[in-house]
Length: 163
Image 1 (tube, rainbow, N blue to C red):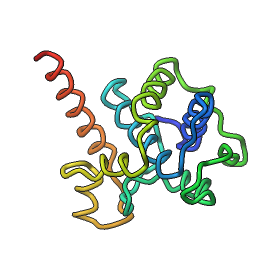
Image 2: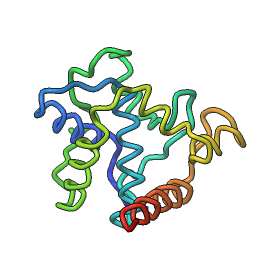
Image 3: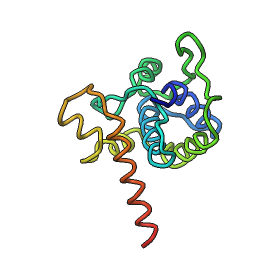
Image 4: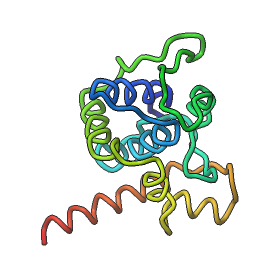
């Protein structure tokens, strides 16, 4: 199993967003991490986030990220995650391709409202909707489902560009 700690990815996304003078809520951040992981499977052929992701009421959630940032509630996040097994989570271990991917995610999805991002993950046929329906809330969403879903999205986009 590869990938990075979800909190390191969270910090990197927050840094990029703050550099642009924008803010994110916990719900937005959670969805952006999930979307980044999915597109990493589809575009880079590998898992970006090693933490398990669960099907919660408002979409996919990484518990470690939720735990670190839930104190902000619906308000903008005001600080980076400080704890990662006793050390600061850094994004310095990201490859150039992973950084580029995250830049694209923040550019394309980072401006969307939390509920729009949540709606995207709730669409019928998404991994979240399938797991929520079959196993209920808080069940883990398998990486193979995320991979397959985002590969399908990638292929659909490529087909649309050809037309």
